[in-house]
Image (tube, rainbow, N blue to C red; front, side, top):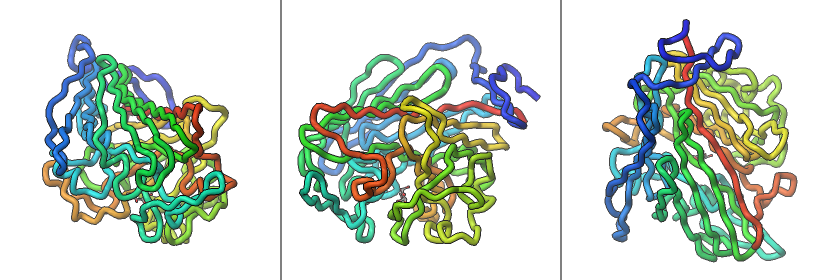
Length: 380
Ligand code: GLA
């Protein structure tokens, strides 16, 4: 069955994907508004930008942490829901350690023992995850206030200067993250950076998605496809062992869509270590441009999300650390498996793993990565 007002664009086996079209009558124009979102503890003003496209899809972005605060997308009947976990106010984000919706950096994911060597010099980072450094350290990019510039009605540019030595990283790193809400219901993120000294970096967005809507329960009945033949198994501290292991015959084989919950309690060492999924997948790539990394779907609402990226990897995380103690939007208690993350990235601990693609950036080079979260709907 094809829902009214929706046009099938591609058929994938049983799943008919439809492009979005407005259920709100004649197309409205793209627009961007902003308002104050409050102040940080040290008195910095924070703004909240709302990007709206011609279909009525909405993205709220905070200058604190470059956070995607809310993302409202339509279901197969044109009913909108906010598909990302988060908080109603800035205070929630200031107190949280969950990275909801944030841009993480300078190095997203883990660096073993908070140490790495570059050009023969050893650097020591803040350890904030047992003996390891996670998501940029104690005050990563998710906890900084970014400078906003409206590039047009569709694009918001956020910039941040990470100073030489910040959290232990070398070099002044000038970072720009541009969020664009497109007419075809995609949130596109462009990451750009330059440095004045050799450094390492790994930028990603840490949105927690629930395609049925945040606060509506767990994501175990949603499906996931990840375009990866291999993944990077981890040790007990979630640091990659260096092996690129085949997903064949394991709970990590998502090459065909699988229910997220189908194998999440499997008798598998890697599932046990992570308490679910919290591993990096090695994306099957043919070149350097945007390629499909993952496709998630909620059979009930019909919402489908495609993730395209220029990055070599994606961390699939099933919010194993949420335990109901964090109360988010509308007071919703976010329990274990309340969402999934698809953090497009360079592989964790790359600075210490000579076999992984390099995450180094040198003066004169331009870092550029793109990730697109595209929303569609599927018929029943
Ligand atoms: C990433 C990590 C997880 C966890 C979350 C934040 O996904 O891989 O282990 O730290 O961020 O809680």
